Image (cartoon, rainbow, N blue to C red):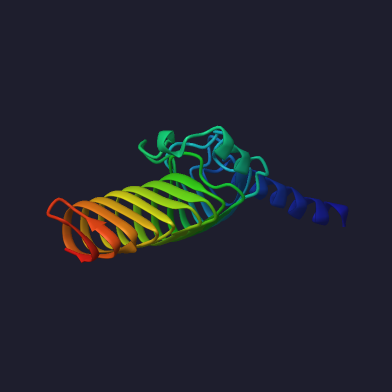
Length: 215
């Protein structure tokens, strides 16, 4: 009887050990181990700001970052000098929930909810309490203070929206786009090149400066 119970137990332990050592897992702690390049299910831990992940790692499902120290990074880090211009090291396809948020070169494809975010790209929807600074912002992005991107397409909602190249709608108190294809609605709107409308108390572009409506 003992032998019959021992063999299945050994088989189970062997299987679990093989899964733990594999390059793809259903569940993993973060930072990811060096040999883990893909998680199909759930990743949870202190996140990727502390290193340890294999470059090009992918999480398909839920990424939960519960590092209580993450929000304090904003006291010592300038978002403009973040790692958002580097090649992405980790990609989350699904739901990303974080106490702090990516503090480097990450990509979110889906829904991101965090206190702040500094990343390579956000595609889908993001809600950040403070700011979202990404190289690319595609989709709907709502921030308590600012959305900042090199380029993007969709809808930005924040007191401050600042982009180099943008297509879509910027809605805020201050909206800036070096090159805009779409609409800016705010108190003050600024753009160098505009293919669309600026609606606000004061609107300025390379052609003219006007109150209320500019094009």
